[in-house]
Structures are given as C-alpha cells and as structure tokens.
Image 1: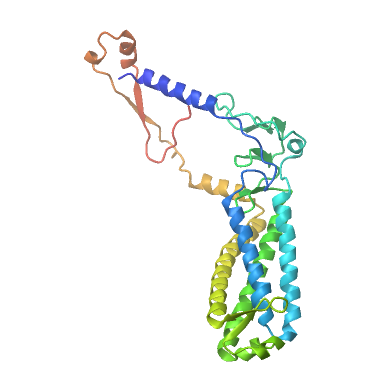
Image 2: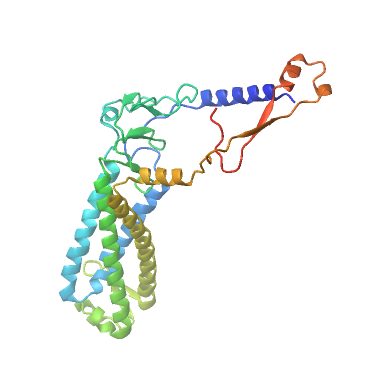
Length: 323
C-alpha cells in the first residue's frame, strides 16, 4: 500500500489546481458582470405586474375610486422602483476597498499561507484593513461593510450601506402586491355580482356586454371576457406567490431586527448549534494496521512506512482532529 506516494500525488494535484485557478476581479455593484438570472426575473415580474395593474385592472374601478387607487399604487411603485435601484447600484464594500482600483484582479486565496481570508481584521485577498463586521463575499469577491447576505435578486451584496434600501424595497413591494391582490379580488367579486360597476367608462356605451376594453383611457383595445378573466387569474396567482415569498422574507428580517442580528450571524449561530460537539471524557480511538511483510519486500521505503501507518476511526458525535 503506497499511502505516502498516493498522498503526495494528491497534494501535488491539489496544489497545481490552486495555482492554475485564475485571479478574479471584484464586482462593484448589482450591475457588474456577470448578471444573475434571478435579477432578470425580478425586473420582468415588476414590469409585468405594473403593466397589468395600471393598464388593465385599475381603469375598471369606479370613477370615485380611480384617482385614489392610481395615486396609492403609483406612489408605491415609484417608491419601490427608486429604493430597488439604490439597493442594486450602491457599492456596499468597505471604505478602503471602494478607494481601490477595480480594474486589478484580486489575488487567489492560498490556504497553505493563511487559515482564514480575514485575520486580525485584515483581508488577505483585498489586502486592506476592515472592520469587525466585514466579511469577504465570494460572489462579489470583496469585503462588504456590515455584511448581511448576498442577494441574488439584486445581484449585489446587502451590507450596512444599502440594507435600509433593501428593507424598504421589501416593504414597498409587499404593500404593492397586497394592493394589487385587493383590486383583483374586488374586480372578480363585482364581475359575478354586478359587472356593470366595472363598465362605467363612457367608451363602454358603444360596445357589447361581452366585450371589454383594455388600456383605458389612452389606448382602448377591445377583447373578450375570457381574455380579461384569464389575465386576471394569471396576475392574481403570480401576485399571491410573490407576496408569499416576499412576506416570508420580510417577516424574517423583522425577526432579525428584533434579535439585533444580521442574516450572516443568524446562519452562523444555527450552524454552530447543529455542529456536534465532543462529549466530555471521550477520546479519539486509534489502532494500527500493519502492512503484510510480503507486500513490502524489495521496497525499503514502503517497509519503513508499513510499521507506522495508523488509521483513525472517530467515535460518533466527535469532530475530526485538526490537521
């Protein structure tokens, strides 16, 4: 059994793999390359829901409600659009890192030289001093001030500089979806109870009862009842699913605020609690396995190893010994 040779070959392959890994550049914000699929999905859903809300469903409401709903939903949409842009565009990196040149690649981490990326508040990759709550994000490849988490929907890290805008984006988006769901439920109820309430616009006087008008009042387009109902069901399901996901995330961050924790700290604490600990008074068991004499004849190096190779078996519930 050539254990030493096999171990050395594995170490050489690992070292060559680390040396061959290319140096990566840091990302500035959510618009930096590469863009994420979730980011495109978020923007697509935002414009689909806004287009359906302002172009199809709000114009169906009674005239005395119309202006109020336009003002509320329009204000929420504009506010969400602004804070969402800010959460994406702000660079959440440490002050010392924001002053650096982003055109230079970041060094590759070498675990043979350092145990951790950040040690004694110094990042070995960014090569700057950072604060105590800063963490090096692997996705953005930079240290983020007061790191909370990396958001794929924003394609940006959420830290101390943009957390308030991220949270306001959650609140405004949830409120907008709740308004849209309320409007859709009202329209569905009125359609089955008294559809004439939804046909108060003067242009409905010249169309039949099974014809509906979309994009009032600027660009009226005639369509059938099934089309309006189908769009309404689709938008309602999409809004409900989005509100379920966003509401869960909003409640989670309210919980973190109450506990005065960041997402990173919460995940780290849970991970430490789930990690099994070594029971008191229990030690690691070990035993030796001797290599048969005939397997090492003619190989002096292997003969020296055969008597000293030991395999460690960990007792269940213990952590592996540090190397």
